[in-house]
Image (cartoon, rainbow, N blue to C red; front, side, top):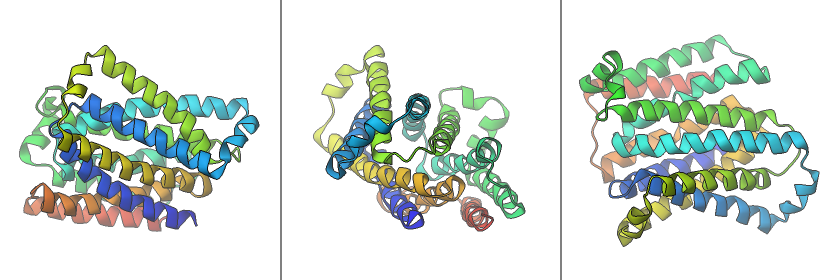
Length: 293
């Protein structure tokens, strides 16, 4: 069951990335992040209300509340970096960098949850890292060696990587909590914190005017992307509750295949020949990683 949920969530996430990228081209990343996560909160809270799961709040112990607070705080930071990275980079390279979530999750799951690390997983990790580097163009690779990712032009690479790291930490915190509470309930409270943090950042940075100036078309794509993302996240959190975090995050990252294909159709983004070679290595690495579980 959890495997099917992970696959379906991947489809939604793959579509949501394209919709969000189209929307964010003419929008501020802080505005996009706040609006998207507000929809995510509505998705989790609505699902919990519909299923009657909010009655489980009384069963939430102190460690579950600590898990919700900790994972929500880390996730809020991840979302900030996610939209800053999405705004600046091409979908293909952005998602390749995001795939490093698999590597970070593997390490954290091994250290804190005790999940085994196998040789195929290590080989897959090497292919994922190598594929990501091949997908970068010369300018992006140079940014990695001469501190270019600290400058505005290529800083989105750093943002994408930081988003992956913080997302991994959040997912592992969620997985570490073994309390039998419906994930939509804990996710609703988690995203209450995320939304509060993101709107506070938006207001602190004086982005309220950008929110008012959103074009209807831009707003539509942001909301559609948020709705697809909401469906994907509801399912992936449920899968995380039921199954193995490392496997679920591996399947989840396969959504990049859908996004990269759609980016060629709708955004006219193209990879160089070595980029396609890197993309192939990336996919093989993800599959090998999953097989190692």
